[in-house]
Image (cartoon, rainbow, N blue to C red; front, top):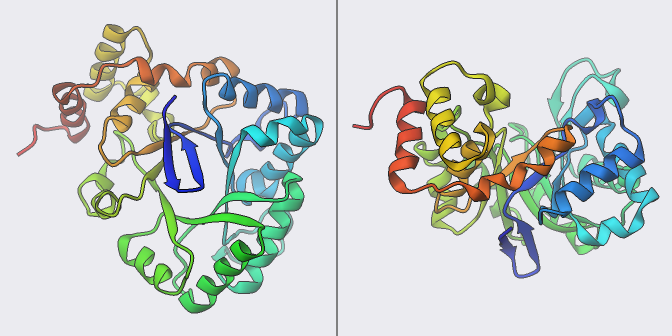
Length: 296
């Protein structure tokens, strides 16, 4: 498993394990979660993606119980988490409307809560989860600088930001933003042509790709894209998921797929993407099927 440098002090695994469904599993025991983590580590997947809102604000605590039961795991992991979404569920069940909060008070409280729930002393990478139309970039930037200066957070990034959102926040910060997490897959490929990936590629900022299997739709698609995925999968002795992830890995922008599944056998097969031969013609064969037409 290759590693990608986001900064001189933070390397992440080429594929990231997404924990957005970990609180929804029928088994959230420390032992079962530990088994998932170890299945990832066995493949060289050392980076784990969380968010305060996952599992209706329970997923971080589910991870925390596993880390408390097996403390040695923490030193082998890079933990990514996110904040700023306030939704009427879990601990925010009484709020009347879903909204984004990038105020200094909310960021500080969210970081403290995440550290407490996960039982850790340091978040390797904190992301602002969604662009906030009410963001005061000076206040938000100063708050993010402060959590880094305090040692609670190592690095800062964003999620779902357009280039102008990125530049606005960065203009209010001393700390350098290191990554943006975007939806990118064969089923959602606009970021490849709308300027999002180009912007980050130009500035050597690796992008994390959430929902790289199109929310699971690519695994069941009975269409041209499904048939092409099956054909390439058969040629490489893997499944559709491995081909879809290999398509992202082949991009020169160093896209980092965030893979989420609760199935241990599927977790064990995440690194099969590295077995796929993805030359330019194969990449475009998949892209053509995804577009539903040949390129102009």
